Image (cartoon, rainbow, N blue to C red; front, side, top):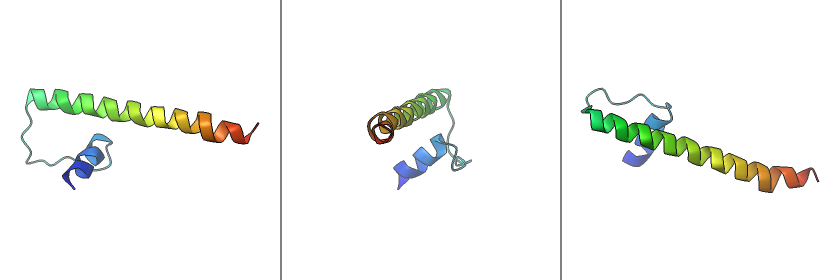
Length: 58
């Protein structure tokens, strides 16, 4: 369940643990992970729109 908690923190659904160690490199890593999750979700939205929703209107 640790992975789901971390993804929820990246997507701003859950507040981060205040007791967790915060180093500069961890901030960089979490920032890159957050960007990659948002890009993945955007790509999934585009694929859904392109292959599922638009063919319904043709």
